[in-house]
Picture: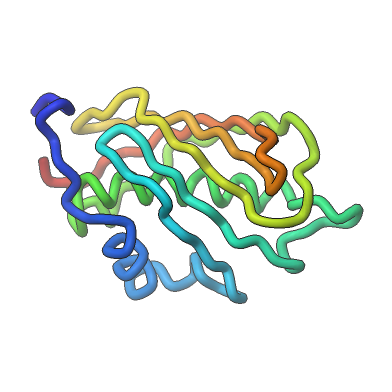
Length: 148
């Protein structure tokens, strides 16, 4: 099906409710997210970062940024396919850290580059609490049993 005719199966609150049940470890230690925007090609996901996600020097840790890039792309895939995308898995994640993010919320802006039956590829720009782009990632997911 052409993406122009595709609709979202779930909205942001549906995706987060599903993940709280099916993938509760993503919410460990008080990790909290808001899905701010969803279309068939884009997602904006905010991580409400807290002290446990900081590294020495008061900056958000690299593993936290990698987690958010992966999580935000998974949110978009779940919104598109619903529960049938639950077994979709990351096959590649590359990230470039551009500058030190200030402590505070981290926002991931996902853009779908290719959405296929076998593989989907997305680009993720992350902005810190001051609105500066602090990292760029590219993620590839194997779509598994996702229904079209």
